[in-house]
Amino acid sequence: MKKALLFINLLLSYGAFSQTISSHDANGFPLGNVSTYTPSSLPGASTAATTYSYTGVRALAEINDANDADAYPWLSPSGLRLYYITGTDSKLMFTQRASVTGTFCAPVTVPLALPFAPGSCWLSADELDIYFTANNCLYFAQRPSLTASFGTPVMIALNGLLTSFIAAPSLTATKDRLFLFAAAIGIVEFVRTSATSFNYVRTLPLPAGYQPFPGQLSKDDLTYFLGASHGTAQRSLYQITRSTTASAFDASSFQQVQGINDVTLYNGQPSMSANMECMAFTGTSLNSWASNELYLATRNTTVLSTIKSEALSVASYPNPAAEYIKVTYPYSAAHPGNLAIVNAAGALVLTQPLTDASGQLTLNTQAMHNGVYFYRISQLDNHKLAVSTGKFIVAH
Image 1 (cartoon, rainbow, N blue to C red):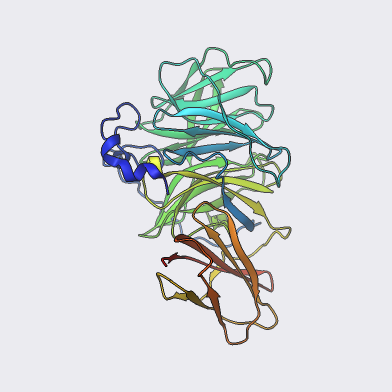
Image 2: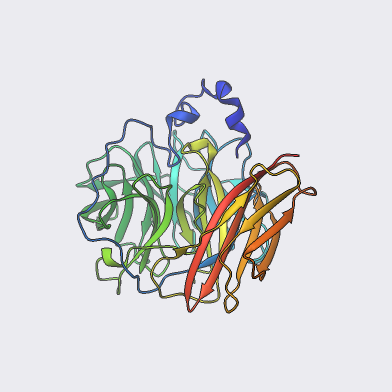
């Protein structure tokens, strides 16, 4: 959790984009000033054509700012280059890594010639074009090479859009279609009418009861990943697909991304590499801008084609734990589950198969530092993934 949350009084004097930590939600929108979204009346979610399953989720501790927001990532097709927004003053940052298993290097600021801060961004595959939101408007800028600065931004007209707060632009590979999150409306699709204008086409349909949050179009233009919540549940990552780039997205394909959502966090703002191997996204235990942190997930080698993941009946106690913690789980000899535990920084602490037929595991916590830990138990049975996540506190 961000250390800044311990110093809320110091931040109450901040102005501009983030007047206070508590006055802006995790997507950067002022709390209490956004109309309630009215969900579609379409039937409930059903099976998606292809459902992606991810493992290896970790916080990007090497670049996350411990004192402020890290949000709205854009991951390059290779999965090696990352742009994102950071800080109360919302700067655009860039970082890269040598391989998909490596860590990211120290980030650098990407300057944009505007008097106000960017809120979210999307880049072309070659990273020479950038579309970004700022001051509740959409802008476009270009550069001749990766080492050059972006030129003067041009405002893009969004005809037919009636909302004050927008975020998370993404375009198709041909750049003739634009997808954008609009508060109180949802995920909206536009068609290009000129170099500097788009017209509203439609709003992406979601099953009844789901509220959408900012997302991003996949690099092949066939899947839209987004954050969404249902009822009082925490925000999770979902996907909605279409069969061709010329067709509309189908609400019946709406499906939760598997193996990635932490039920203790608000998960959102996803961005994927070209082959879906990696996904960058945000997670926060509080619905506030400053508490956002970046996470990265790696996809399983298996792509599942199933209904959304089932929940396992799992419990952990005592909590807080001093000397030990017991974890109970449903045992399967044919398909044993797997336990993974990470600390609050996202570092893997323990992973092991769950092979005890008693369905109970006792872990010695005396060597663990005081703090919050997250666990994930997964079980793959006949191509159906069942997952349970939770957290516990170690307090010696």
